[in-house]
Length: 217
Ligand SMILES: Nc1ncnc2c1ncn2[C@@H]1O[C@H](COP(=O)(O)OP(=O)(O)OP(=O)(O)O)[C@@H](O)[C@H]1O
Ligand SMILES: Nc1ccn([C@@H]2O[C@H](COP(=O)(O)O)[C@@H](O)[C@H]2O)c(=O)n1
Image (cartoon, rainbow, N blue to C red; front, side):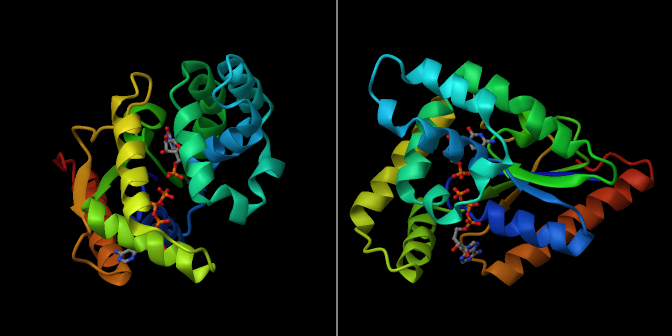
């Protein structure tokens, strides 16, 4: 079974994808980490003319050793850099095969990102599109950073999230939109456990309908 989980920054898609992976015993890939690793690798060239070519080269050279330093990868700066390299078609193309191979491994997988249900796994068995309002997302991200001892300017963080969402939505190569057959799950008023229960319910219902030969939508 392939489960695709998409949604905007700090919507909780990674938390849900990881919970679903645990529940169904599937491997999980947070595809945002790939873009973050590429962004960090070319941070020095940002705003220079060679930025795009450097980012494409970094994406082609990416391997799992670049995904180890979780603290650097999950920083707010890495998120911004990721969304800047993600607009380059050459970067997205270079990262496609890795994601596709992960998704199609024997037994299936859970992937989360922006374009999983639309570009990477349009054939996923279940697609979830996670939503939460911008203020709730900002607050979740702020608390996550504060737990690490980072001093957070909530006003700046809110605008950074909004700006990143806009860049992702307007990215002509991105595929960041809800697929027609994706299930929308708004978690603004849900805690982590309630959101995971709701996601499991959607997956179980969708798979049961498919097994019965019915269209789930
Ligand atoms: N439903 C929820 N209620 C409250 N907090 C949540 C909820 N879901 C996730 N969180 C918390 O919000 C933070 C961001 O969650 P998460 O990393 O899963 O988001 P994401 O959408 O994967 O973010 P990113 O944009 O980095 O990929 C984490 O600290 C997580 O524990
Ligand atoms: N499938 C994806 C995943 C991520 N991106 C870009 O990377 C940025 C960081 O992603 P997070 O999920 O870790 O927040 C994101 O803002 C996107 O620009 C992507 O394009 N496609």
